[in-house]
Image (cartoon, rainbow, N blue to C red; front, side, top):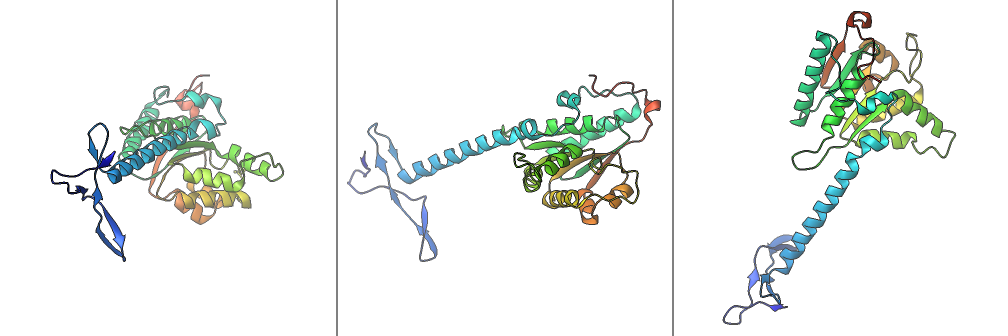
Length: 276
C-alpha cells in the first residue's frame, strides 16, 4: 500500500472531508492510497464507511433485542391470549365486527405515524384484551426496513403484585423503578385490565395505594408522545376517582375509544373470544 500520485508524481487527494480548526469548519484533504490490488481508495472514506456499517449492525442487533421484549417481559394473566390474533378473534355480533374493524383501522393509522392512546372499555370477557394484544402483535412485526418496534403487554394486577413483592424480596428483579423504566421505554404498550390492581373498585370512595399511583404517574408521564393501549372494565368517572388527575389526563390524551356495550347474555358468547 502506497500513497497515490498522478502521472507527474503529485499527490492526489480526496476533498470530501472537513474538520474544525479554530472553531471553524475547514476543508481537510486526505491523500488517496493505492492498494496492492491496484485499487485506489481514501482511508478516511473507508473508515467512515466501516463505522457506518458497525452502527447499522449494532442497530440491527438492538432492534432484534427490542422485538423480543413482547415475548420475554410481558405479564399475561390469561394464557389463552398468548396465541391471540386478529384472525382468531370470534365476532358474535355487529358490535364485535365493528370493534375489530375499528382496531384494525387504528393499527394502520399508528403504522402511518399517528400517536394516540386507545381505551377498550366494557364488561369482562367481551374480547377487549384479545383485540389489544392482537394490535400489539401486528405493530411488533418487522417493518419494510426489517426493523420491528418494541412492544409490551402487562396485566395491571400481575404487574403490581410483582412490584409489591420486590418490597420484601430482594430476589424479585421487577422493582418499582425498573417497571417504570421498562413500561416507558417500549414503543407500544398495552395496560391490561386497568383498575383490577386496586381491588374493590365498586367502592366509590376507594383510591389506588400510593405506590400504584407513583407507578402509573411515572408511566403516563414517560409515555407522552407514544402509543398506549388500555383495557378496563371501569368508566372514565371511576378511573378519575381511583387515580391522580394528571395520570388520567395523560393516559387519555389523543384518545380513541372502543366500547363493548352489549351485555354478554345478549351476545351469546358462551366461550372466550379465543377457545381454550
